[in-house]
Amino acid sequence: MTKPLIFLAFADYHTTDDHLRELGAEQDGIVAALQEAKAAGLCEVITLADTTVSKIQAVFNDSQQLISIFHFTGHANRYELLLKEENIHAEY
Image 1 (cartoon, rainbow, N blue to C red):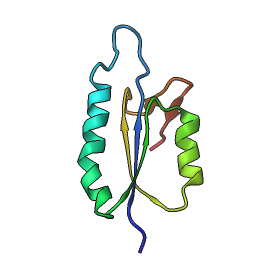
Image 2 (image 1 turned 180 degrees about the vertical axis):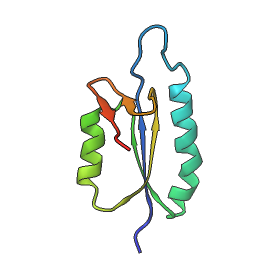
Image 3 (image 1 turned 60 degrees about the horizontal axis):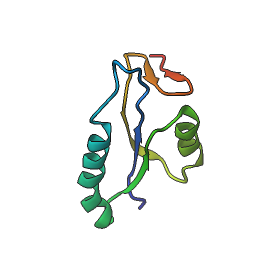
């Protein structure tokens, strides 16, 4: 049986008014919280900092297993993840 794959993506698409000052600390905290489970062989974790649409797509396209959890930390609204190169628009 394959281990669950957790994909963590972090991005700070910002102007001077809306910079995510605590993004690095949040990333460190999430990665640290999952470290024990990863060390025990309970899951695999992929982490991308300062990510882009292309990098996110590459992980989904290149992954040899199904991604169980996708977590994004950064700017977003109801329909989009706001990234540096372009926005990912979700239809639902």
